[in-house]
Amino acid sequence: MPEASLENVRKLRDVKYNETIFDILARQFEAAKLDEAKEGELIQVVDPAIPPDRRSFPKRGLIVIGAAGIGLLVGILVALLQTGFRQVKNTPEVAQELHHHRSSLFSKNLSRN
Image 1 (cartoon, rainbow, N blue to C red):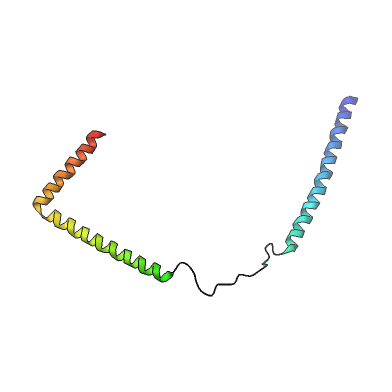
Image 2: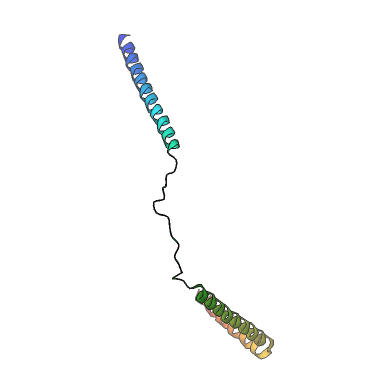
């Protein structure tokens, strides 16, 4: 029995020690949280930015003109291709020949797999 009570006293001492350590750390943690809340701004502006007098790059005018030109060229190309395909499909001989080429092309691709 004395060994069991001695072991019980040791464990009780360890529990009290750990409780005390926890209380001390909890108080320090709360104090640190309060200090952090009182500090205010984390980022301080040292030197404010000054906008440049004029832009150096990219030149917006050139970008807009280039994009408009490319868009115009792509639009014309799409319109020409659509018109060409429509005319090819409306011509019976060309449509039949196109169908023959498509079927031979796909049959070759399917036989390879």
